[in-house]
Length: 240
Image (tube, rainbow, N blue to C red; front, top):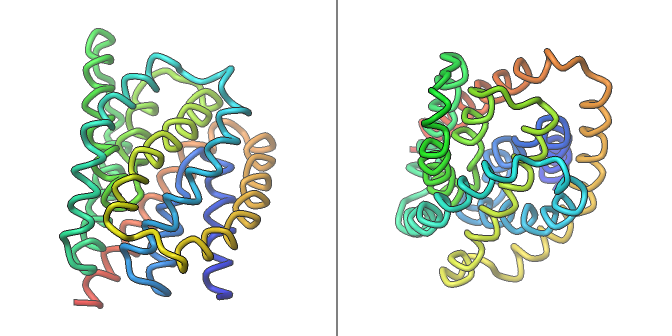
């Protein structure tokens, strides 16, 4: 349980700083304690509850049009991701997680800058991929992060928008997890235990974000994505 608590708290600090990364950090570690599908269910449940607080705190500064378009795309992608989660075996899920994060790293390193007129369409496509990845691995982050870092959105607005969008993707995935019998007493109990740690960790991360120079935001994002891609890939190989 010490590993579980450390994973939740550390991932929450990362989330508070960057606006994303909770699932990226928590799912691989929690999956060492419970089955990967249950780890995904725990993270989605916790993110859904915490997301209510995020909306109350950040609704005034989010990129509303971007979040709406991302969410419309996620409406289609999320059910497909949940279906894949229910059908795939644990090693394959871990390999998918590594691939998802790796794709995000490539996008961020390349720093794409699509024409402004394509941004609305790009947001819909990004939302679809984020929903797909969110339903499969509770990791909608890489496509959405790449979308915001490829534009001119400030770190503060991007961080707030990502937090709210990830709440929406988690809420979309929750019904499928319930229908798939992945939300049981164990998952609910572990999620309840994780909430205080996530609350405190997010507060610590938010404080660090306010203290850190804006130039550090992209560096932290890239570093976390690379570390998680390597970690998930190694887990997939070792557990086959």
